[in-house]
Length: 239
Image 1: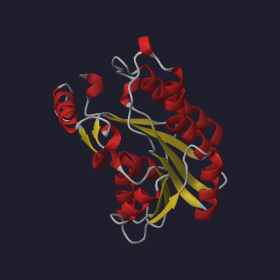
Image 2: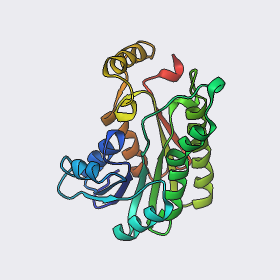
Image 3: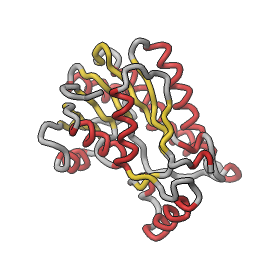
Image 4: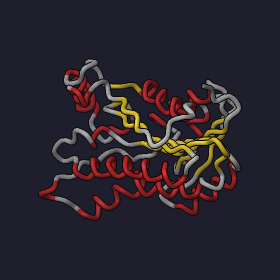
């Protein structure tokens, strides 16, 4: 399995899991395109990626803007969607429904819009890899909206795998990972959360973005996997 000479587009590929996936795909010979709504982030990411990588700027909640970015890129083999703003937990008893609806815009509707726009650009034998999350299986207090988004993505993957076959559609379901996802937390609180979470899972530590990236590259390369959701959580679901 290899990505040699494949064209890979990573939406949200300028930081965290997305950047790690772009790096690993490039290391395996892919021509990588990272897309973000923030031009500064795109420029910074390109400074860390191989010289063969490219960047583009598009509002990932705007299906038209994403479609125009794909038009600029041209045909490609694999679409990866890792975009997501830092998590904000919402308690049911004080629920702001507008905030709950907004939480779906990028992580769910952004992903759905991106796949819709990508279909006519994806080459035969290509694939889509979306991003779910372990909150679907083990949500905590305040996670009703975040867990619902992850569950919706899981269902979307299976439905798209059927509708778009033989194009392959899969997802990665990460557990807690050291990434910018937790940027809204104070550093001390974040490190404490990493340590406490690590103690509660089978492998005794939270994940690194480079470890999660391997699952995305696997799903791009594995030509007999579709409708599959790969969990990479250090055994958290079993603890």
